[in-house]
Length: 246
Image 1 (cartoon, rainbow, N blue to C red):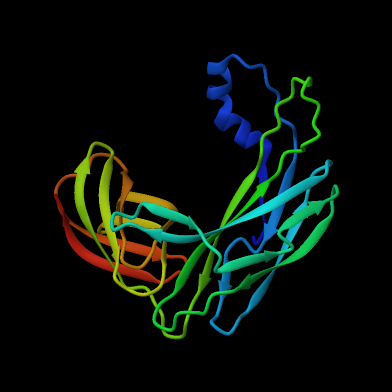
Image 2: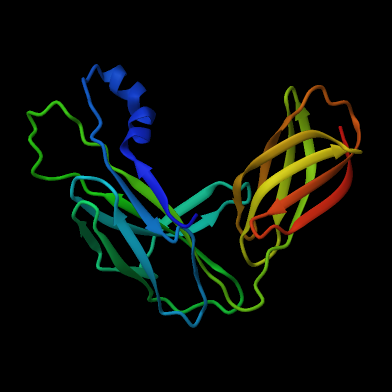
């Protein structure tokens, strides 16, 4: 599916402990918006791409974009830095209930022929400035973060993975990307013969020059010994490796 809805309810649940700790009576306001596509690809020839934003709710929305350079430290920790390499036109999006608008994400900086450029496009709701402060409702601002990739010809991932440790209920698998394009790991599986002994499903990004350790849940007791590691990426390509579990 190419459209990802975000609801205030999910954000309200996430912030509920803070509200309770502050003893503030709060009620989240219902609402939702969606964006298509949720992962943005550009080539060095592209100066701009079209993005559709839809207000799925019954109240007006005002949205603003934060555009960030996206890097990862060697241990895989994300680093976001505001950038002027990209610009959204228009920069402020006003949507009536059930309305949609096509906006353009434009590239201002020159592309890099040697490596993929990676960014994060974060679309945030601006709470209504004119809201009645006497109202006990507390508006919860929504935010949706989407990756942006500007990829030159020939850029590709180069990922190597291996088991790095084990603890109760989990086996650590470390994946390092020595390529010049991102990798997204969708599934990791450890098997012995026909039996699956550990499994992970998700969407872990490993940017060039970074590495991440993924804890994959074991299915019952796992003893030390030989196993087969299968890593599946977002394009359904698989890597398989025979190794030893410590």
